[in-house]
Image 1 (cartoon, rainbow, N blue to C red):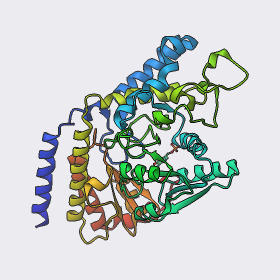
Image 2 (image 1 turned 90 degrees about the horizontal axis):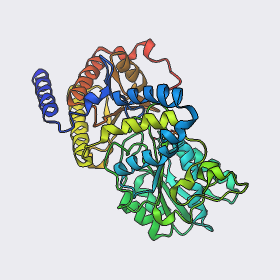
Image 3 (image 1 turned 30 degrees about the vertical axis):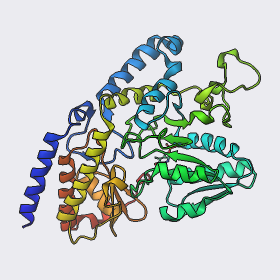
Image 4 (image 1 turned 60 degrees about the horizontal axis):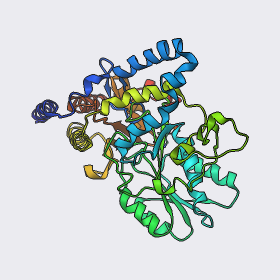
Length: 418
Ligand SMILES: *Cc1c(COP(=O)(O)O)cnc(C)c1O
């Protein structure tokens, strides 16, 4: 019985991979041998184009061109050029998005700008289950401002509307929850915030490159996102930030460094912000990271975001089915929304021994990750993950659970980075 079901799942995976309209993207990536990589939502894979580009940036632009490369190699425009490529993936207007700094730092900048646009309002509404750095940055900013700003945290998505009122300055949400993958309705929640006089700030860390996003169409006021997850920019690659055109002239950000100045090379004593979103830049851009991100974004060229979403939904649905079929009776329960349209491109399960199971899976070549307290998380990057990856991971997990090897002492030792 189980053998027949496994054979059926394997056959369907092979057929789905053959029919995959995105199958030409996988060969653009270096994928390590004997590894099923389901952690592209933490660190995306390396593209061959990135390796080539970084070699050229190091050997030619930096090695030979040195300082002249700021002009000759266009280094100085990279935040805007890379921003324009990301803008296409997230539905941002032209000139409304730049690539720079880290997600945490960008959150600080846009949140400060948003709060300043709503003087007299003191509350930032978010979720307790938001990624901690977002909440930590908001806490730190509130303390620094010293104007009595406070964070008000919803315990569930359903609770959010009741918390947004006349005291709310900003509704600050992550579109796709990092633990469960649950997806918010960006249009509805942005409208809710704006109808009550607040601004909507979205973190796209688990959305950009994972599903179609329509910042302009959904009426977002501000957004930020990550360069090293589904955008594959490499470890610590620059992040991005978005400011809706209607706010760009009025918005001011506190990290008023020279790259956000109207004339950085005039070396004036006083600060005058640049026009548009460039005023949100701070210091000298990280050229190696930006170049790496720029090259990696090439993998999205010619990809229909609707096709990417369709594949992501089919792939994650298939993984849920495979795990629930092959691992039945071993204590895994789905932590992600069962309906594909209500989640991003990841699948999470609760398991009482999640940490050991995650370590045992990694030792067996299936790389997902663990999120405290009991979550096993599997990211599916639609550009390079296949249906064969999904059935392969489910089979290995079933074998581990049946053997009990995940309970071995060796798999319980906690690493610094999980
Ligand atoms: C990954 C992630 C970040 C990462 O922030 P860094 O500044 O790059 O460390 C921030 N917010 C969310 C929601 C994330 O998922």
